[in-house]
Image 1 (cartoon, rainbow, N blue to C red):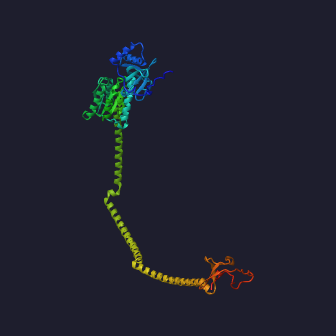
Image 2: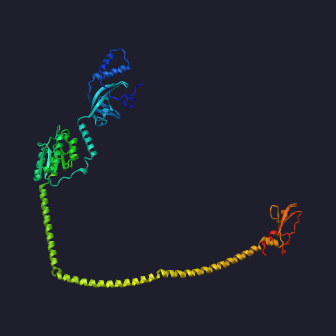
Image 3: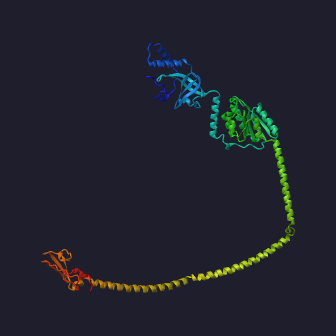
Length: 506
């Protein structure tokens, strides 16, 4: 059965929990003794390979290759390859945290570490302790990383950009005193406006310590700008490789530019070059000459503007004087201004007319108010409490009389209805019927006997009369023949329903 390919990401346990240490002297001695043995176990062979690799291959090694199959979990597992070979690599989490970047598949890097053999899986690997991008790619990567950090902090936001002064008195130029960029700035400033002064701050613009010099110069000018009479700062240098311009990509310079209170223009390298300082600066210029043109006003244009403003001002003043003269002439032609007493007479006449109008209005208003008051007085008398009480008493007397008559009428009618009902009750009272000689019969349970068929021979019956009851026993029954329906019954027959007698009135 073929062995499966080794996958470090699926290895269990703590096999990758710590970095392997270089073999000790005792380990090398044991490896030598194992090599002299005729028969070895698999573990012994694996240990021999491990010891041999660690003893014979120098450490640390620096290997240049292309990253492939990168797996970033806790530890990093990847391969380094070139056109002909592939080396398996491992980077422990403790070391990977110090790399400062995460490569992509296909990136060319320089890996530093040592070769060893992982005996449980029988796999030879390169254990990486340091990883760096190759050549200019490293600087480009560092530049992008710096831009990402500063963008996150807001260094590139427009809200922090300071506008350039329209007429700076003096400009501090931070650059190398021997650079061609400085000469371009001087020539452009002299050509455009000689009234603008330049303060040259000599710094190194490349090499060891140049970034710190540029940063110190920016801070010094910003701190003493009032004493120096400086209104703006220009940071510039000529073109070069990315290594030559790297001082202007350092964080210390970016911090100084961002914290600077003065307007700052940056012109670093050629137009195609871009540095961190230019992105943080208030204004970026493509060349030193363009930077000087942005900061220094053109004297010729200023003179043309002054001539134009002078012409406009003269025209405006002339038109203003002409309008004032015309207005004065018009005022002189008005009679009131030539004879002020005429205005007083006119005002006196108007005052007299207004006085008469006011008196007329007041008299009319007074008459109207008097009529209105009399009308209100009449309404008030109608609403006087004594009047209202008297009216209510009269109405109450009328209502009391009507109530008395209505009550008497209803009482009389009620008495008549009661008398009529009483007579009807007397007429239908069963006791009065019994007093006239009638009776009714019931069985022992009190059930009324209506027909001969309701009783049987020997049954006990109770006959009710006016003054009591009579108990009897049925000895026999006889049914009365039916009457001729065409003959009207004039009086009650002995066989008629007894209780029907109680329904007739006297």
